[in-house]
Image (cartoon, rainbow, N blue to C red; front, side, top):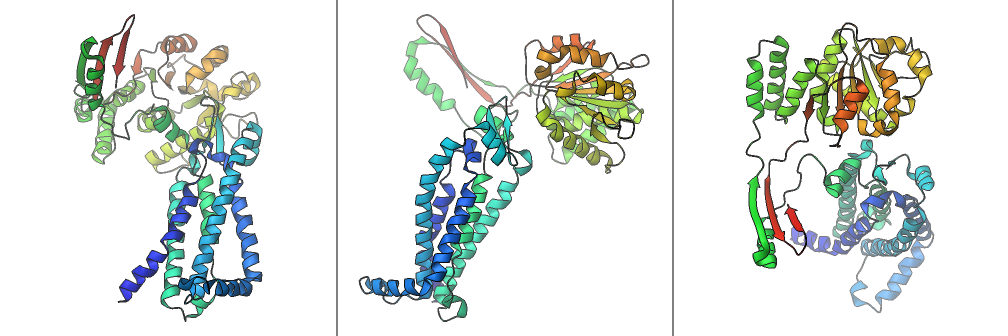
Length: 483
């Protein structure tokens, strides 16, 4: 009997739940979410004003509700808890109306880059190459945790309503309670932080990620196109592009048979990594071996975090030889993230962060703060004073990693050439590695600027999936559809 009563009271809370979820979903597009920076403050101000009004005029409102109940029979037996439930619903309804008014205004007002930087710069960053304001990487996981907190708060609010109606004579049921205030304010904070990140933009919007996270079957589209073009179809085929992809274990087994002890050790490391459930890309493993062997390599993958396991061994190998490593940035905005990535990669491999120091090359106290892995910002590429101050560091460089070299080659070729002349290659040549998107002529340009030969190029990872290809004849051109 009690369970049935609980279900009845829970059903009465459904309108409140649906309205709260509606307030949670009513937002600007994810790509423009940084523009609704004022909504948490508007929600807080609204809830504060309503709370003051309800506190000051609570008795009057109860009398008004009692008077209304004379015209609405279903309210005649309602108690304080039922009135509180109704007040909370009305508060959400009014807020939804206000939100519908403010969101279009904010969307038009917050288009200024300077205004966005001033108000949302702590949480969002402007990506010049994408011309978008994207959520900073450090807040990507915050969305998940905050969503859990929000739904927990909503569940607690519903529980208060249900218990208040089941036990109306209890003290807490006789006290005015408005849990909707916390739900609304918390919801707006989460909505603001639920913008799209760079990773999500590349994966979902541009569709240029190296791995598939969403499965789609376009095979049925072939039948539609056949019916549409009929006899004009020239070619129709389905190709499984994953059939020729070699297994990672086959590559590792070959490495274990090598006469080089370092390569056998590397094979053991990647074998354990693969057995632990992590993906090991055979081509990247071969590139890692080439880097250890002194061959410069270009990774056609702009996501340097995907290359952690394949770059850390060559880097640490140079550091163990008392050499220095230099990272040249193609854009300054990623400097701090690259620094964090290198520190994390070293810690994961040696279980300590104090063995080698990662730092950005600066003019102040180069002798005292000289790092083992130095990061040169793009803006300092022509800073000759900085390079002179760190001449000792540059003369000991044995490994250079360039992040997105296509960005710096347009205006920084001379700066890179001057930098290369500061390396001491009298005993051993410097090994170069770079990561970037597929760019025409990048290999030749890098080889020319770095005064070296880049013969090893790791192509973009091939998608192990089924590809459908169809060609049909048009009046004056050939159209090819590749899905």
